Every structure is written in structure tokens, then in C-alpha cells.
Image 1: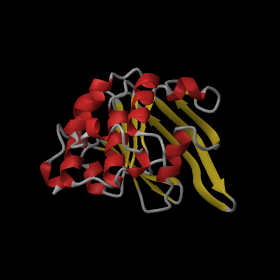
Image 2: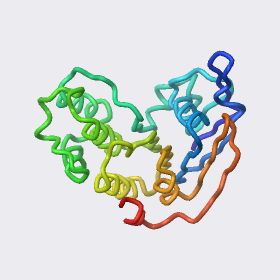
Image 3: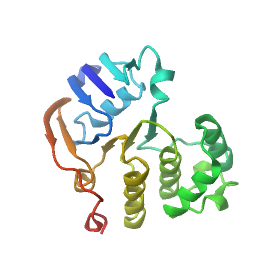
Image 4: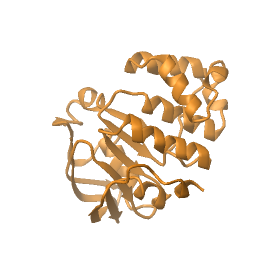
Length: 223
């Protein structure tokens, strides 16, 4: 499903990715771990076509740099940072629903499960929401997308324990047979959910460990 071939990226004299090669099959759950500056977020941004890189990145055989529209239509993304949108929440949600062919009712139901009163927030500006609310809304929009790959960069950073548990329960059900890529500073949280852990250090893959996938994330992870 995803092929990353000798991907490198430098910012000035700093090499952030150094010849990364990975193959991720359909249905795999993968966690990217590593210290700050190890290259995790840069690798995800390369996959999403947000950065020009050396090497190749393909999704379902489609080169992201050559045909981003086709490749990225197969992805859903929960970013680490929320965009500072001035638009009302209702406008953002309806535009996304139309773009991704997602029923608004699905997003309202998913938001309720994550503890977000979305129906009450439709008239509010997106940027006026709290950090936790913005994070929940971005998660809701991605979770309701009918894509093949879910990419999450610190998806639960601003969420409380209940919302984090609901998020993982949601992807365990909705994305049971899809590719899930997780990057989080809560290593114990994401590694307890996946079947494969890729560790990066100084822009290189230093470990690629496979394990048995847990049926459901344990409640102890979210205390």
C-alpha cells in the first residue's frame, strides 16, 4: 500500500531524513517513534506530499509527487497542529463533508462519541475553539473519511484520557482493515495499539519491530 524508497530531506546543512526505505502493507498498523528531531513528522509530511524530498513515495502504486490528487485521495490525516481558520465550524465541516463525500450525520455521531458537541459549535469560528476541541474536530473529520490510509501526527496531544480512549476505540472499529500510521510522544499509547513499531534516529530507521496486534487498546493506557 505504501512504498518509501530512499527518501532523504535536508533543511540547509541539517539532514532530517537520510535514505529511509519502508514498505507498509494493506491493513498494517504502524507506530513511528523516536526522540524530537528524529525525523518522524518530516517522514509523515513527505508521505502527504507536503515536502519535496529526494527519493520516491508511492501510495497504492501512485507516485505522490507526480499525481498528488490521486495518491492523497486515499489518505486521511490528523495533523499535529490545527490550522488557524477564521471560517465558522459549520462551513469547515460542510466543505469537508462535500469534498470527501461524508454524510454530516456521520460526523455529528462520531463527534458525540469523542465528547465534542459539534451541533452546538457550528456557528463558532474554528480558531476560537479550545485546543482540545480543535483536535477532536480534526480527528472526527479524518475518522469519517472513506480512505485506505489514516495518518496521525500526535493525534491525542490535546485530549483527555476519556477522549483518547474514544479515539482509539473509534479507529479500532472504523479502520480495522485499513493502514494506520501513528506518530506520538506517548509511545506506550501507540505501541500498545499497533503491530509494528518503526524507530527513527537522526533521520534513519534504526529499528523495525513486528509484534502481535492487540484486539483492543487496554484501559490502563489512558489513565
